[in-house]
Image (cartoon, rainbow, N blue to C red; front, side, top):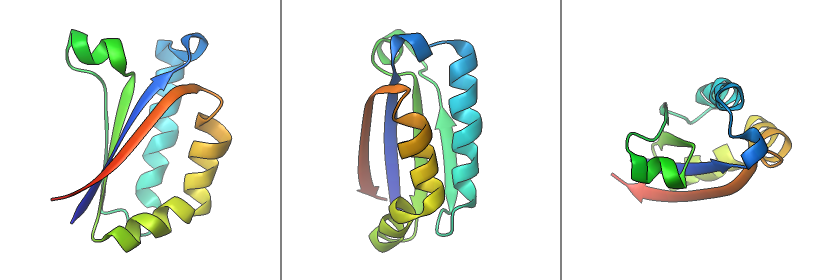
Length: 98
């Protein structure tokens, strides 16, 4: 089992509650991409995390091959490349075997 952890820091002009709501709402659609077993969208729980990140996404897959298919899926491109790239200052992502 693979979990993909993605951490987002929004540009200052997009670091508003409305913008975070929009980012969360659009991210929720990624749960429908084939191969995604589960998707969790989180907000920082403590001051240290709030100082570094605006949101987190954790997606669960059965294999790294499924992660690769997800990354190439048009819905992923529409979210990350077309929507999020212009709003995010930093996007960090890692895959972990669990």
